[in-house]
Length: 160
Image (cartoon, rainbow, N blue to C red; front, top):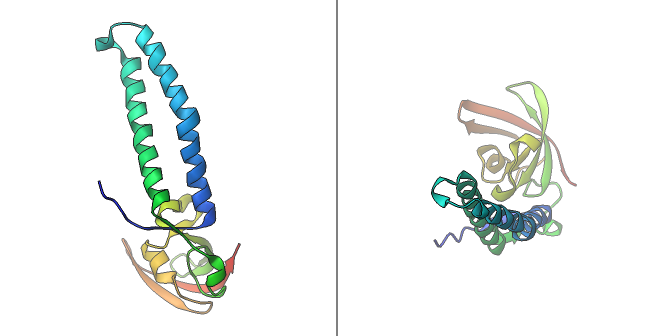
């Protein structure tokens, strides 16, 4: 499994992944070990759903640990001091006018590993994120999205 994709991330994003990794390695692994011990004490493993569930959870957590380690190993942290403050890049907060809904929306541009649409954190690899990268206040972009074309006017660019 040579997944050597480079992950562009903010310092905040790296910290969040490191915290999750630490939690999984220390707290979650111990919890699962305890669940397995308890399930083993019930005896017959052939009909022991608690044991099966704990082993499945263990496999999921170990897979997530490997994924996080890979992401952190291949992370490229954005140095915001090297990017002009008025140009949109990873780490920028962008306020745009969305012409489809006739409203203002704020996006935080992050690397793909940090994306969280519910919190308006959009990936630099998403259609909208990709279209905004490199643009400045006053620019208008049209983005091909699954249900057509969206049009945005950039109103503000800042670094928080």
